[in-house]
Length: 435
Image 1 (cartoon, helix red, strand yellow):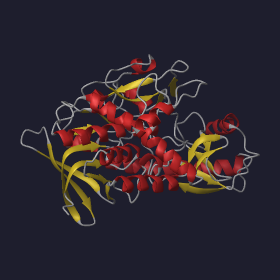
Image 2: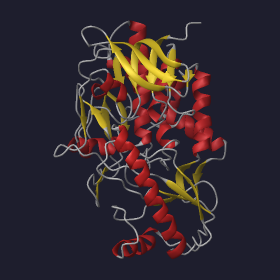
Image 3: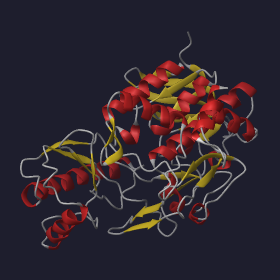
Image 4: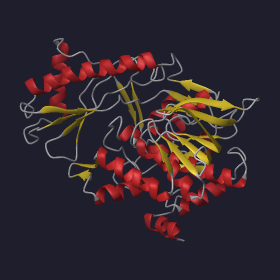
């Protein structure tokens, strides 16, 4: 069997890549999913971003917006006893996500290739089509061909290598949102632990006294699935470019420095942490923002906050505009009206210039401000599922993403259990998936 030629190649095995590969393979496309680590999950495992942010409409009515592959992963982790916490209902065990994602991929017929880092996109003479991608791994350099490619790297690596138009950061100075090294403390006496406000007050005093150097204005923590384990999303590394390997290295080092200061602070000054210890830091620093692809349509924050609707919708979300200051302290939060959501249009997944590439996940075409809302894992997964579905359809019909009839994508997504319409319910989605 030829292991170098596929209908669809998905670069990156994070949330969007998992959904893209599963959707593509289930559509009948011979699909390769290439991942640089030895496991899937990306932000949810390698970056240890936890819990999953909201996948339901804002407010108190709890209307779930995202189903499909996301729901399948939730169901599998729930069956393993590794999803949800009495006080943190979307907390999940990263080890469970690795297993659940891998099972879904293998059952769908996805060809997995781990420990393989994307290094080059070989283009046609016109520079408009990817002819093959070159990966670096233990065998050296390996080339893979496909009719259609999905960039699920999170940083638009494949798009940039292919020469697509890309942007970085905010308009005024191109600075991206800060990076965060997540970490967990174990053996915490959670009954004696202060709430977020109480810990933050102690943290700010330690900052004023010069015992902590971290450009974040508060302490953000969550419950983990395991008893006595608290998850911290608190370090803040600013003014670093996640696509520059030298700056990314500096960010990792700075993140670990901040973790050590925070661990010492927690143990010495916060009730409940006296006997706690640093259980783990994430395998890599968490990246909120880097490149964004310039596509056929660019989403804006104004549209999201106005609960935009699009005829070519392929996903929905309601996570707020959430901008961590790229230059220091401060976070901007702008919520949608209660019970509302926004659509994400297919055109935002189609990059300008390149004819056989689709973007999955957070680097789709959007402004810096809009990106801050659609960057979270559940929404990235919904976008990835749409990208994989569209890629498989393009491969089968010998057409390009730009020319593909989006109604075919919408119909296929609905059959896969996604909910795109305004009147659909979870039951109707399940009925459509079974038809």
